[in-house]
Image (cartoon, rainbow, N blue to C red; front, side, top):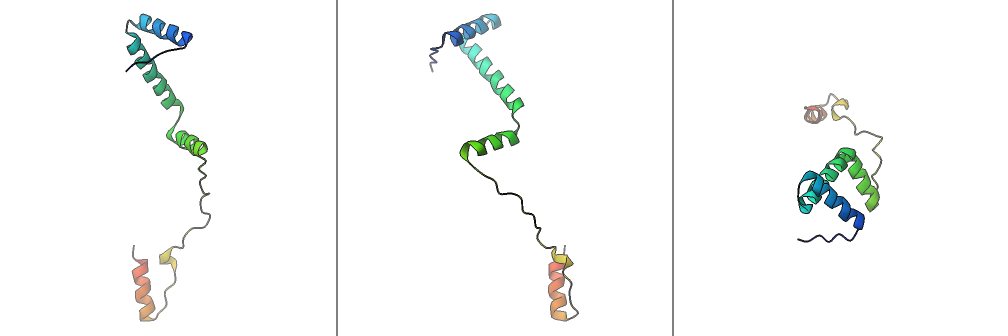
Length: 93
């Protein structure tokens, strides 16, 4: 695959980097891209990435629910056998 660099500064920096590292221009580009990606990963946490992507694509999260579901084992059971049996099934851990 070919990469055509039209920017004079990018070409100069690439050649300088390759010369300093004693590698080919292709290797210099690969090294620079790996280092840039690693720096980017260190700066942006997964949570920040998710937030950035939500903003980019206009995704809005619903706010967390304020009310909790009732705890089933706290429902009082009566003394009638049919109700007591139903409560026993609900209350099992």
